Image (cartoon, rainbow, N blue to C red):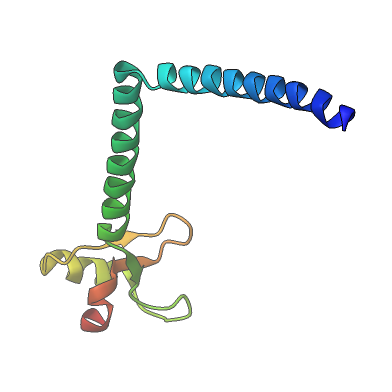
Length: 111
């Protein structure tokens, strides 16, 4: 029983030390979240979310171009380009292989 009595003060000392450490940690945490720092963090999060939304919107709205004819088709490219120009149809020339590209939604209409 004498050992039990001796352990009780040591336990309360440890508990007091733990409470003191917890108080210091919560004081540091409260100091960390001062209003100016909190505002910077909130603005950073808001800016990141806004930038992500803009990137997603631009990525999904970008018009994709597809080849008008396959590589193996034997068509005169100059005549096709002349026809597309006359009818003011948007097109691009592929830098890789020179294929005529038109907007994806219009491929079936121009074939």
